[in-house]
Image 1 (spheres, rainbow, N blue to C red):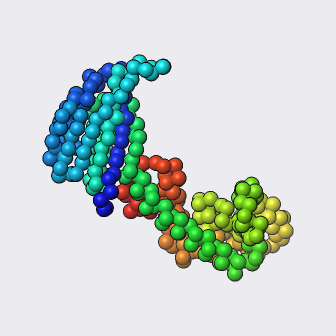
Image 2: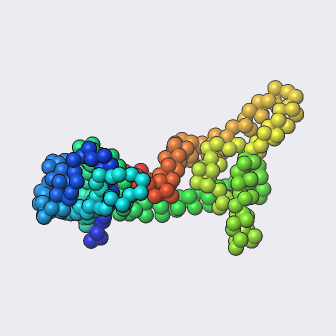
Image 3: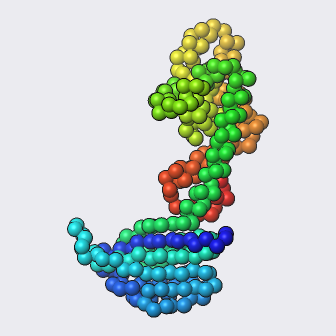
Length: 272
């Protein structure tokens, strides 16, 4: 993936001394013996391992643990792994952490920097943004033609309308000039307009009123038909038959990982 340098940096702490590792050279030894991590390794000095075949370089930096105010920490290290090969470093991260936690028994392992996850997240977000905007456009045009100009009032549930009301105060430039309801709802709410909500019966009082005014079996049968969700009423062929709800929920989970800067694997990008 080009000539970029990718970095994966980890802080490891041995709080009680159970690893038996107190200096760079002993940690270097503990890392270098793993056959699962390395293909063609070269140990350099007392704090570096280079794997020419994988194009991976690992550098160890010990940190000062004597000035901690609350805990007595036996040893701590920052491990910086670099590569210009995205795929190799993406695959290296998991077994590397497994070795630190499982084999070397470090009590605390924290990721300080993960360029691999950053790149995957940056590749995913434009795709999510694009499909989200396409769906917003589709829903506005569809419901306007199917239900009418006031479709939002009969389709959106009460809680969703309340959420939009709170957010409008934060949008001071364009909101006063246009109907911004659909642009202000969350990603999961957008999907639910298709596979969950029922147009015309988005509030409990609407359903109660229809039940109370139903006097015949035909009235009740008609009500049953009308109570079907948008998924069945309008979108069966285009959405329901293609498992839209399951796919949207999966994409929602990935979107949350992007928003919260979580750790990514390449399969997240493939799935998105």
